[in-house]
Amino acid sequence: MNKKDVVAVTSRSFSKNKTLVEELRNRYEKVILNTDGKSLADESLINFLKDANKVIVGLEKFDSTILDNLPNLKVISKYGVGLNNLDLDQLNKRGIKLGFRPGVNKIPVAELTMLLILMSLRKVHLSILNIKDGIWSQERGHELTNKTIGILGFGNIGKLLTDFLKPYRCKILGFDIQKIKREEVKKCSIEEIFSDADIVSIHLPLTDSTKGLIDKKLLEISKKDLKLINTSRGGIVNEEHLYNYLINNERAFAAFDVFEVEPAFNSPLLDLKNFFATSHLGSMTEEGVIAMGLAAIEGLDENSK
Image: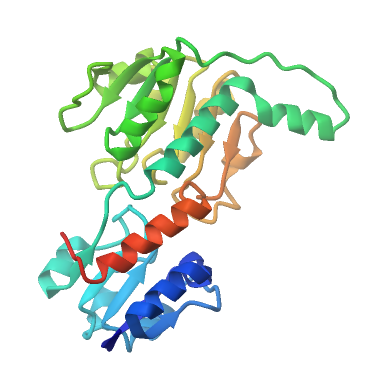
């Protein structure tokens, strides 16, 4: 057992998981957990981490202001996969090591994406609402088989989603800055995808170049019944532009697990019948939580950048 290091865990779901906590305490004697279930930011985050030299983080933002107040911090290990909440330049500048395992959550996120795709085609959400209102309607949807699917971002999740789609004989269009090494995928520009696809699924990281990438111009060239799925990061889609598109195209549909501002209780999109939301639960399966947690524990010592 390591008796020297002090490890703090900001993630609430990690802190509540008995299996992960037990594994962490088997390796480290001094562990600080976020057992209060509070969202940590700014001063509360600094106070929580003031005694730690290693930290397991979820979605908390670490910028120069936070890091300036944590001079003892030596290692940040990511619980999850997105790095947009971490200022990587500042970590490098300070010599803070990063523990990170790409793709650790690919199975639950790809499975949720499939669920949202099928739901958007079959209008399942409308059936539930109608039944609750005393209406026994049989909304006609569409089959997934033989549809044209655009996948934006061909990392671990985009690749696995392609595998999941194979039995449906879909035409797959792919967009990525890297070479796509899949024979069954046609690499296209993002404009070509929005022009031709029946369904577009977003699996891009949130960066300066992808922020607001899906905007009015792309939505205007898309089909009037486009199905848009986002299980990656909020902020990639201009939500105001999407709202206007959905208002003017009632046959179109969007299903999001992520929003630019979370919790998204005040998002106007929630008022639309052709929009469906989940609360950033892409990785939130029992298996996914364990996989991400164990990877984060390993990342405290097996650091990569």
